[in-house]
Image (cartoon, rainbow, N blue to C red; front, side, top):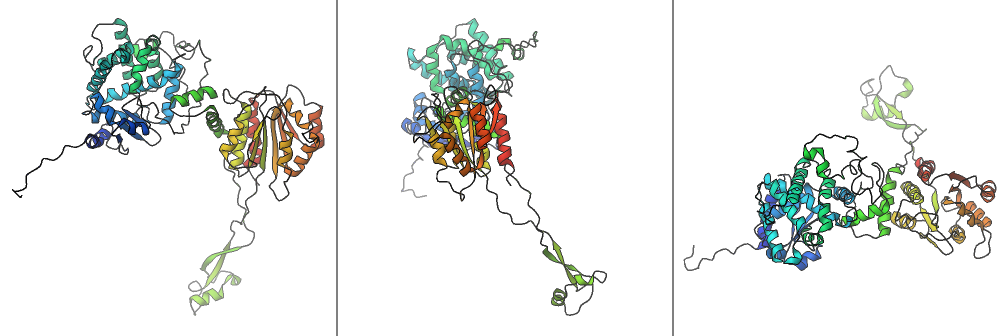
Length: 597
């Protein structure tokens, strides 16, 4: 050590370094096997905003399993010394509640159902509810200072003045924590005066957290029913508490699956905790009425879907947006019908490989004196040894059969026309069985290797189509999920031009129409004066794969359709109700694309 050189004390670690050093301990609070990449610690609020963090000092992202922290806001709130607590809390959202985009989607669906007319606040309530479960576990099992964090947050709210005070909802929320952790009234910063209503509701809220700790999703509707009256009466509370929303954009960029079907206990979960025997400890006096037959708070304002049914596209879209996905109605419809059609598409086509009729040499084996003389391979035997000793140096050839080389078959291309006139539903708002059936058939055709041209049509000059026969699933589904709702005039020129230059060197194609009696407008004259009958006949002849019309008709096909069937060879299948289209789609897909030969 050089005495002439003065000693300098090591510089203290920066805030980012201190928080990064706390990361391994935060992971270990959940399990020593927990693995997440290092958090994104933003030095300024502007940097945090660039990462998608706004309105709070921390957030999570499911798409890349990230934790983002705004260190500037952390300093402002006086939370610099709570790195372990805050990071462990954010990790809890990744590994416990909600843990992934799909469960986040299911959570929002349950909470929305319990908040009639206030569904827009479901993301905030979902955040508060999952925070309760995470913080209670960290405070009691990991002995972290979660209570002190909330005391600091309350102090920040108090400094913000009257406009930032959340009122009774925040008081209820803090009181739930005080009961969970056996703290005195007001110890976390809430009011110290006794409020019988808040005390009773806080007790019920604490019981929801404890009773449903192992099945937190089942308790979501009960918690939302509990806080509903506070949302109705306290608008300022909603604004102030939104600033702690660390799951606001958690699912942005994800592809949540499994959210179409309504869970069996989703509707039953819309019950106030005071009416839940598991919460109160009382025996259920009306076991039948307490199940799905008992109307929840939302029964008077919306149509309750039965368990096992699918959500409507508009509800599916609202839940996606609540989860943080930035999508328009058309994008949502594409996701909706793709996910709903997936279980019905055909499996990958398979064909048994035929055996070759020509014997194939497989190898050599010893030849002994008892074997037929003509099976002896003298040349191979001499090559192994100049002395031929039966059973030792003599060999014979072994033959077998092998799979034959087979060329892959060419599947039928598909030319699909879907009616979108005023008599058809808007697929972006409610279930369109035409769109669903078309999607099932398209996904099956693409899986079999076919190309698809899709056309959506309504009145004159109201049509959209893909750029010819394509393999792009998104391009096709964007056409099928469009909507016009106008008059009825089949685009004859589209059918004419689709096959005008098609030759025998092109793949055979099958022409499929999904419509009602309005399909007969395809036999009118086109803009050039050509007869629709001639256009139809030429298209079928050049397609070389046949044509099918599946039509929703109340009676038998009229004279025009019978003529099309008898003279031109159109296959006409009639349905009585639009849901029957799904059965047709599965039959059509199996018939044309299941076993390609």
